[in-house]
Image (cartoon, rainbow over the protein chains, first blue to last red):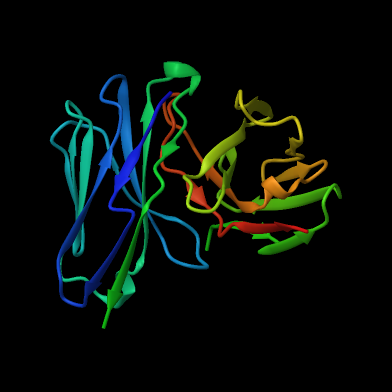
Length: 117
Length: 115
């Protein structure tokens, strides 16, 4: 059974704080790791797709790193703003035919971030 | 803007009464997915269509069916909803490259309540 774990489950920070959270995933047959941001009442929005060990991606104040050998990814938010409040989901995909998943996304439960003004 | 649309946003149904959730897309993507997310759980894939080919996940209950009449539309039918089927239902699309899955684009979801 493929398992994707995210921690912490929720996080409350003050505006201006920097924060980070973790996604753990199977380290074998890795193909890609996805990060999504899901604001309340909106559609989940793709942030990053990461495929290579050591990958670092950046989008504004948000960045992510990837370690496929040990099976984890970190998402960092620098200087959190209230508009960063959302649930951050990560999702793993393996090579086609791995575990019968055919390369589909397997999601974690998410980290819910609340940023207070 | 190209997008994934889900209707309705909230759906209330009665125990055992069939219900249909709708998804449409203007992205012209050839893959469409349905996910179920129960409270405090991870989104879980129910099934997906690759063009007209239907792919059911092994643990998706028979109570859940899907139809894709054309590229743009996909429906989720729940034949006899139970209380345990109350959840957020997410539709997503993608255009794979080289036979592998790429970024998925999501609709805002339909929250189903079963009374």
